[in-house]
Image 1 (spheres, rainbow, N blue to C red):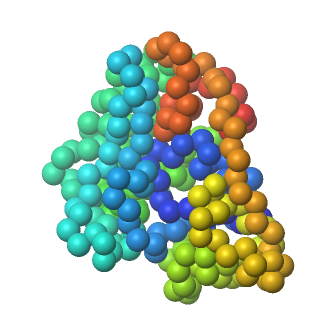
Image 2: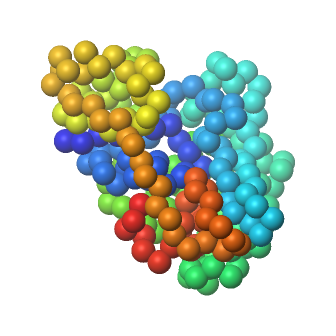
Length: 222
């Protein structure tokens, strides 16, 4: 059983989706602490003037004491309408725009109060578009309260995983001897970003998934 895990991410980059695609089960870490200036609530799209950030505005009061599923969206900024407009402007000439944009209009029509609800629904949307069938479980559905390396280990044990795909930064905190003792093999992802046709000049990697979905001829290359 192959498992991967990551905190929520808005318009996740392809490496995030690669971990999910290669796993039997992906744990959506909605119980970890929110990190300011992370990719949890923002990512980039490519425009004719270069990359720009699309960010879901959140209420940051006391965010150091809040878990991800306690973070509220600041809907005073009408972020969904603005993001949809930016996506339309950036990708109206992309190969898959006519097919995808009506679906995005439906997706962005939903109102959210909680950041996790928004990122969850958006993730499920993109996995469906890309044909990724991996089972997704929220960590809040599991009765596990450990932290950092022990959290990952306990999540693996809870679903009987014997193989864990970690992001590259996992090298900084995973206690590998504990995984070895538990019979769990750990792989540190070394993702090679694919090159696909983009609008507006030379290729820029690490954009949000919408750039790939709008432009790529072959979705299987993630």
